[in-house]
Amino acid sequence: MAVLSKALLALIAASVVVGQSPPYGQCGGQGWTGPTTCTAGWTCVAVSSPYYSQCLQGTTTTTATTTTPPATSTPPVTTSTPPATTTTTATPPTGSNPSTGVIGTDFEGTVSSAWSVIVTAQSGGSATIDTTKAHSGTHSLKIVSTGGFSNHIFYGLSNLTALGSGDIYGRYYANFLNAFNQDHTTHMMMTDPVAQTLRMGGQFGVLDWNRASDDSIMPDGSPTSDAGSIAIAGNTWYCIEFHLSRTTSQIETWVNGNVISSLTTPQTRWGSAYIPNPSNWGLGWESYGSDPNTVWYDDIALGTSRLGC
Image (cartoon, rainbow, N blue to C red; front, side):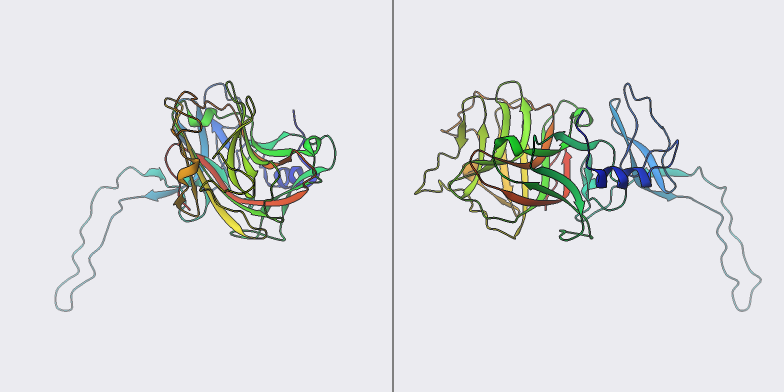
């Protein structure tokens, strides 16, 4: 099992109440043996029944006795109705809060134990909760890699059980210290039975998809052509979204809410034969040359429908 950084472990340990799951933490599901109740103000909701239940904020609606204020010239009239059963409806927060997906985190407060380092650097890499830069709030995930393949590190979900077996949608905000250059890099990875590793990263200075199995990139770029993709600048927040169909060959990509047609299948480059079926998901940094980088990630989420920016 990968080991979390000391800072991240301390953040999680300090916020967990014994016998209760933290906000956005798992509280039930098939094979779950941990806590089944949530901290005060949070409700255990079956977000992917029967596989996964998660602590979400809820809104409580109660029908109670009401009284009509007395009129000026007549005695007060009271209208009473029997108290109704109190019901709790889990309502995910709106806006940039990542719980608009099935599972996510904005790194504020407690971070669910479902999130961890899933690929550990052999040397020269780290993943920590950071306060120097954030898309929303005051915290983000900071990835530092000194460059080179052995110094890759990825933080995310070791399994995607919470999403069931249907389509996968993702959304994350990323801020790269260094702009993308001509070299090949990866910042998002998923283990896949056909692609070995399905990756999103950069080459020729633009955003691209890559399959480790045949090292094929999408789009078909070159040092003199961006093939319709988008250049990634340094020190800039990008909202990156993706959609993977596990029943067809469709892959879709959006940046800052705009569809990137060259990173959408089926198309000539990847055709329609490859059907993605990832088993995990991580964000980090991996380079296949000597390309160090520091990346901040925030408001990350996975879901079963498009999440938006």
